[in-house]
Image (cartoon, rainbow over all chains, first blue to last red; front, side):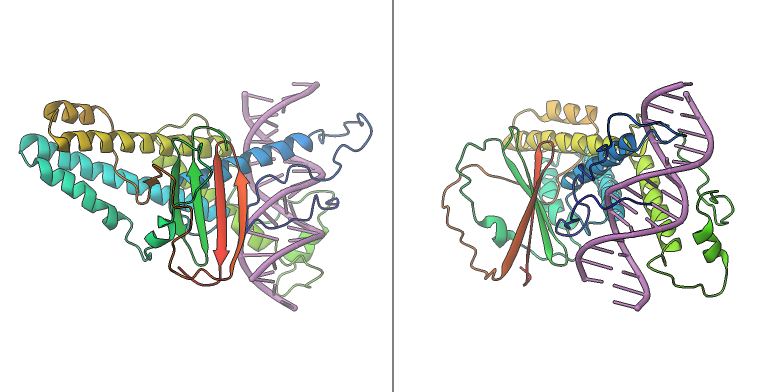
Length: 166
Length: 166
DNA sequence: TACGACACGTGAGAC
DNA sequence: TGTCTCACGTGTCGT
């Protein structure tokens, strides 16, 4: 049976908590134990699960629109996002060959700027005012690229990436 | 490679284990089954697992670069691919700005043809300077609740919830 | 109360 | 032989 739970299982604002690495005393058992049948794993399996969760958790910041915090939803959003990027890529290529053949310099550029709202049109309210406030993060955060924020039902995910470590 | 196991698997005979078949036997008893403790799931859980696997399986075709067939590797490849697209997007934006300013017409176009282009994402802002530390959000963000943060490799996700909607 | 999402331990198969 | 990956059933937690 499933051994006592690892820890308090505090939900991380929703689901998918990061690691849950420690778990129980796991090999609190002394040294080595008789391997018995094929059950030597236990720790390796736990490690594998953790790796997969970390990957899944790392997938979330790179996808700008996160509908829910589910594991399945994260993957779904990633799929949608990639397909969306492919669509844009196609349009850009079309614009480029048009630009190359014709003249239309400014038009293409203007069109690119206009495409941003078209993309993010879903049913999303503007939250520009929210992140308009500049926070004074005590400087020293150079090359910082903030945001990709999405507002779900009641949650906002703000992810910021920087070159160095914070 | 061994992703497609016996996944369909509606019959319960396959999963019958010598050690603990009692719960399954209870469930196989069709009609309405005895609720028992908290073990009502079994089928819902199996359904959830299948959904998550389907998503993960659907993620694979949209990512052009597949190193391995692992679950973890699929997600990893997706992450790398998205980041790669982001990088290309950044270059394209830079090229377009340069193209708009005047010089390098043909050169930029040629350069764009080389790479698989993508386009701007929806929300992405740079913080050039940080001043005006005071938050100027006129909207009342009252009852703002918690900020759970997580630090991964190089990313930090801060999610905060509030009662109202902004 | 029941439902949904999750981590866990474990047997099985592939290399 | 051992190691890796997987699906499964189950207990737990939060809504």
